[in-house]
Length: 318
Image (cartoon, rainbow, N blue to C red; front, top):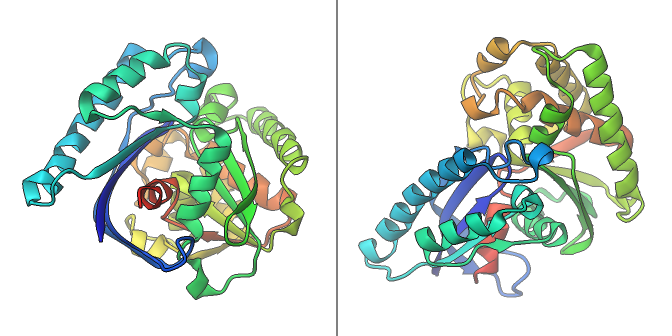
């Protein structure tokens, strides 16, 4: 058993997983990952990056504040708990890839964690997401290949594979980026929704050029936009990962939830019991991305996974 710490710093959130891992015999499937600590903070690191090309000082400070708290948890569950230093990996994705001043981010992370953050490519991001999402799917016996879709704040990753990632593509459609680019009113106007859908559809057409989405038999959806849509579709009174993880949500349910979110005001969206306060502004765009994926690629349902790139980062440490 190895204790590890994985930090995923995306466009909208920064997340921590401290876990005990016992790998499976073949190194690619099976094994167990047991949560010690799993945290998420909405920090909006990518706020304004699509327009300015830079990480703002305020966004950096929000991110570093959350990370300092995570560093304390790593110490508490490592040396402080008699386990010694924990293997730690910090991965940064879309917003940091796009920023001209990403050196400011790197130096701050090194100061906090003592490790250099890896600003990974979209392809590597997709591979880690695939591992995290599918390592435990065997018990459900879903049809393979899988199409794993990770809807982030700045980008969405698409990866097709059966036991490992065979083809992947990262493309710049995400819930923060689409909100800032198109959904500016409260609620957004029909024209704004139409423009966002057209932008998403163009990106999905580009994905088809390099990823064989038509070969996939099971759609697996990851990240906060997907899990929030699932929680609303399941009519949960509060966010419950145990109910959401590995749930199966139909295309009709996704479409109805998307319609409700896009026609609701900010105050109305905040009333959903499963809604994280930091997701209220961008959930409409996230739901729309999922809805368009299912429509354009012809999936009748999505299997929702609470395990994603964060779990893939953890597995990579062993």
